[in-house]
Length: 162
Ligand SMILES: CC(C)(COP(=O)(O)OP(=O)(O)OC[C@H]1O[C@@H](n2cnc3c(N)ncnc32)[C@H](O)[C@@H]1OP(=O)(O)O)[C@@H](O)C(=O)NCCC(=O)NCCS
Image (tube, rainbow, N blue to C red; front, top):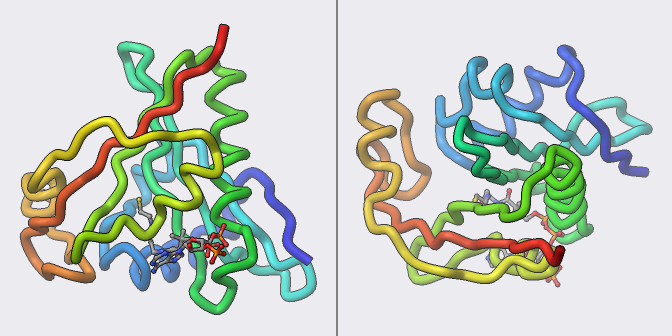
């Protein structure tokens, strides 16, 4: 059984293990976990987190689902979709009228597209080399490009009805 809930401090080890495997080593930092709202999916039987989603509201009130990742042993069970749904709920409760999410495109595929579309998001534009500056400054390694990420971001948006 999987439970979607807020992050607790004991989750950080598993979160970093999933992030390093799915998003690239050092892409998620301890600072990210402290400034973002972090939702996790917990395997209740094994008592370990198997997925997470980071979201935040920026200084100008712009709201983002920043990233979502699921342990590959648990993929295809709706966990990614549920994590995004819970983060959207949090951002709506924080007053967001529009939510953006920069999705990772490589080899022409946005592999998280399905879970965002299921949550009502639509693509609005593409931004080449979106993570390049960040990846050099923070020194993280993209699972596709290695050091210095040249992946394209497809920005997805969800606009709330009044
Ligand atoms: C994308 C990701 C979060 C999906 O998690 P999940 O729990 O498997 O998602 P769900 O079960 O809710 O939805 C699965 C759907 O996503 C799609 N999907 C998942 N991985 C995919 C891949 N590698 N390529 C294409 N589509 C993929 C499938 O269409 C699938 O639909 P289906 O179940 O009807 O076949 C997970 O695969 C992951 O962590 N990927 C690596 C990190 C990543 O790309 N994160 C997004 C960064 S913005």
